[in-house]
Image (cartoon, rainbow, N blue to C red):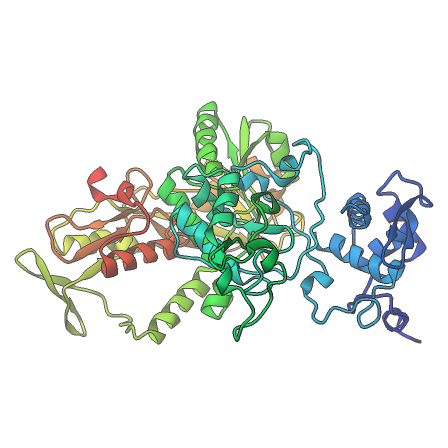
Length: 590
């Protein structure tokens, strides 16, 4: 029997990838996604002007893998694409429409020398919640509540990386100069619109200094002019067809890269993970999420980074007031975090009990990664850079010459050094005592329990935190990971499982998510959280001692902030200053 996929390929009705066979049943389900009659003409698709009826578009949408609720967007996209004025499956549906209703096939009607991924699809959603600016559809005249599609005919995406700029003017200048070579390094100006997609982290940096979207466009326009004499054809190339019209005979006339401010479009897109109460912690999270998202590219190994969301259930009006202020700050810095009603929380996690809740906070882009994978990758990269690790070699003492560090003592011998960085986590107070410091860091035990595979919950569920009881849980590879949110009764420097804690965990779990009554616990572990009085870490030089720096007391969120904290410490030790204001984390606040 001939493979049906091969038949589609032989007929030339695919985009080179497997398609969903458009059976009558599937097409009918797709047509149910719109009220428009199946025979209605949506557009004539140039250049061959094939007739695109609603039914024909439904067939192509099925082949692309669209869901019925995507279909109205497919219809809108086709109408926009075919206007004379002119999610991935939606874009692909448009591509299949062009192939099957227009005959746009490579080497026949489509004669481009080189293609790009947009030939498959390039469909993105604007991240309005992470932007302090009005969204593009409002800027272009639509109402805020309207759902719209903007069709942009562009070349392949051009990526700009900048991990060092910390000021709006510096960052926008970097973006502008990076675009100087778009199309051709002598193409001044470009022939049409340019769409800038700015990530939430950069948008937060720019917006925090009060820059409007128009300010960004104006600076981009003004950043990259070049004198006409540099753009004339020569040994370094020629692509300046309009130069004479623009510059006349003046070789010093400045020619802009972009035709006008109005022909620059700016949107914010992408995801982040932040739910903290202070600017420095939010910025640490912004940098951390950016790092975890590029982790595999930069470190060479995956870290199992999953953005499945954080959901806080608020138990009192006091919680609501506190989180309302936190959310306002987080959103102003680009975080996708929102206050929602208890019933909305139940829609996110079916079966969640919310009758006693007064509100909830939802961060859909929050998530988690594998600490072991991250730590091992850190160590491997450090070794490759020349660092040496002494495992099972505890520091027994720190030698001082007066109040200046000169060495550390270990079972393997004395190591001379003028600098000690106390990043000992729960053991930080013990290291502090070696130089006479009484650090306000109190390690307390917390338990984690993991169930057997539990299919009675639809996975994955986000991390759900019950602020009233401290209980939290999330999916863990088809099981449920949960904690009573316990804080040990006393300071400890080692942690073992106290199985008596399981009873309170079960009670809290069933109270918030009753279906967990049927779950069976498979294993457990306990760890130490280095707590400070205000729940924030300490980054500071040790007072009165030369050569001891403190990076301690991160209260259980040190893992997610590890990249930014390491960056701050490295900057301080190599340049004498940090690119972020970390003064809120000084030891002197206690």
